[in-house]
Image 1 (cartoon, helix red, strand yellow):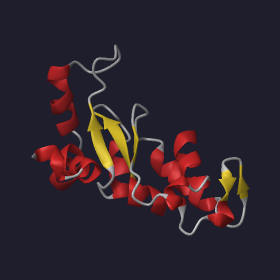
Image 2 (cartoon, one colour):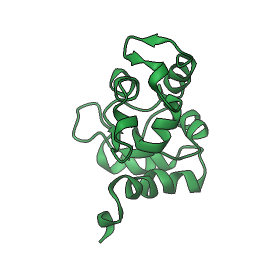
Image 3 (cartoon, rainbow, N blue to C red):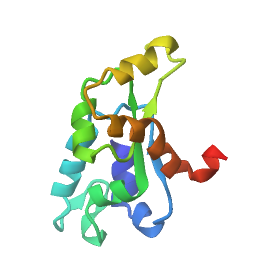
Image 4 (cartoon, rainbow, N blue to C red):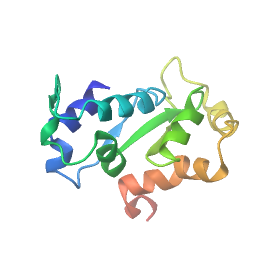
Length: 139
């Protein structure tokens, strides 16, 4: 959370609009709350992370333009995150080989069991990674 806030409020994403930031190893359930909270604190307020009056866009707009977040297969909050981001800017993370990760054979079936659209699943498993890394990922 703090890393994303610092990249936005210090103006890094504004100064480097082609920079891409991947938020990994932190799950995704907290993101909708955090985007709303950061947006609410950009009305001329100073933040512990920087001066929001220098931002030309809302923090959520910087996120949508330049960032992705990784979700784990077993995240209970995934549907909420997908609804907030409309399936965009989310990539899949197996969390393997961490000891608390789902065993590899169960990771994809567990992800597939989520009640999100087939389109959102395709975005998370493929399209968003291609956007992040570019078409060279498939060549």
